[in-house]
Length: 204
Ligand SMILES: O=C(O)CCC(=O)C(=O)O
Image (cartoon, rainbow, N blue to C red; front, side, top):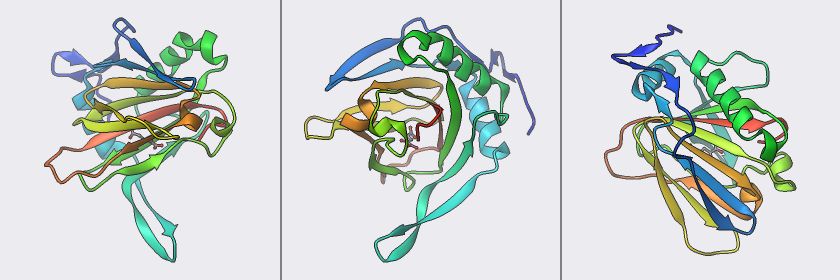
């Protein structure tokens, strides 16, 4: 893909973590949020939307096979990412969370929500170690904001973060096994959003 380092006057870059705020959710889960962590995020959205080899997946739903309502592209460990700023972001997150996480972020999952019909249902990232161990999933969002909702698995109030335009959220502690998250469908006219999820080895 074409790599442009500038969005008009604004470079595509990661900012320092100044302003990162932690919210303790309970049950050992927490989230860190930093609005506008990536600068030049709208240009990065444009480059990723046009340059990533997006895949439309299908999955079994009871007796039917249905379209997964978003486009996906997964970058395994050691596979070059589609823009250099994503490697910078992953490495900056690895440094920032080294003491708490004890290992680097290694993989990047990209999801493209084309409009309000695209979504992801309530889930925790529990395919791998997240089902039994504390871990972290860091998500950078570009494009138009969509709400990411979180709710405790045992029931309780839902929290909501509208994420787009370079916003960062990090889900940590027990979040993947004690809380669930979702990006719900909406009938409102919303623009497209891409989320980039950085995870450590063995977390999916
Ligand atoms: O798009 C997002 O921010 C959430 C993505 C997500 O939860 C997932 O792919 O597991």
